[in-house]
Length: 385
Image (tube, rainbow, N blue to C red; front, side):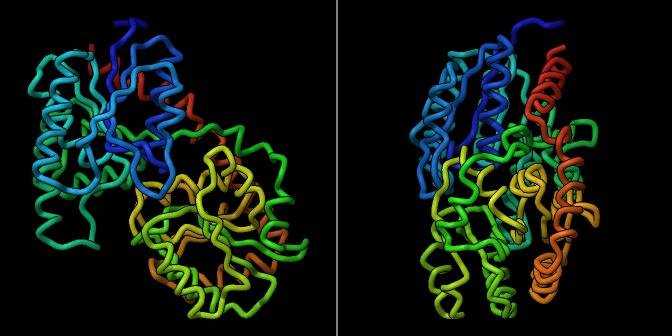
């Protein structure tokens, strides 16, 4: 195929703010800029987390919204979504169908196999099965993922840990997987933006306060309760905490903040537009990510590119970027360790700057979105040939 133009169709459940969606958006934009014919099929951007649909529809490529494609399991709605995706793939006849996220991946890969003559690629952003849901639901997801993998020409993982976990569950074969880290617009995070001091002033922070930030949806398994537990144990009034994002757990988190008498030191910003996340990272002194389930959280390399030390639980893809040269890894749910790590970093500007330099050096090329598109395009060429 050489440098021939490809017809590519991406399918994802919804275009809200989140790592999988940002990855998909940058991939579609990058491929379109290189002259490929790109279509994005997605469900409506519903939810309180914010949306990326506005940018997607302004990208120049074709965007198709399938109203019945929703995140929650709904047998009749899922059947309608499958039939709609099938009809669109029959009309588009892409060379490559590239699916993202669990439900879209299951439905779209079945539809592409039904049409025939389409090379099928799927990105594992995070696995649908995990220890924090019921055994029967895990068994169902594993069975569906195994079947879907048999229909797939190439599987892309956003972290090596995702490949290892999939293979351990019998999903896919080793030769199907390629690890491609989820790219981002690196220079936007490296360069210090205007407005950093104004952001801190908006939280009533002076020059001496240390700001500890988590950027994530306010949702189950994101770990806000562990951060609040550490904040409650840390009596230093100079250490403030910031939760950036929104979601279904907002009221629950606000009530927990009040119950622990932390309202003076814990700030909930609500949604922040994606273009302002670099500002948030530069305004922070330490970035934490205490999720119990993640592929490789984008906030970690984003913070590292901004020159900030990071603290994360040691699970999924986090150890692929976080170590003693860039931050602190802790056992999941280790509130005592989290308190100690935050206190240690808060007390030493020199240590924060040293770890920040190490993180920036590591992530600058590792997460460049143009290199991500290069690698994805190489996967396409391989499966087409």
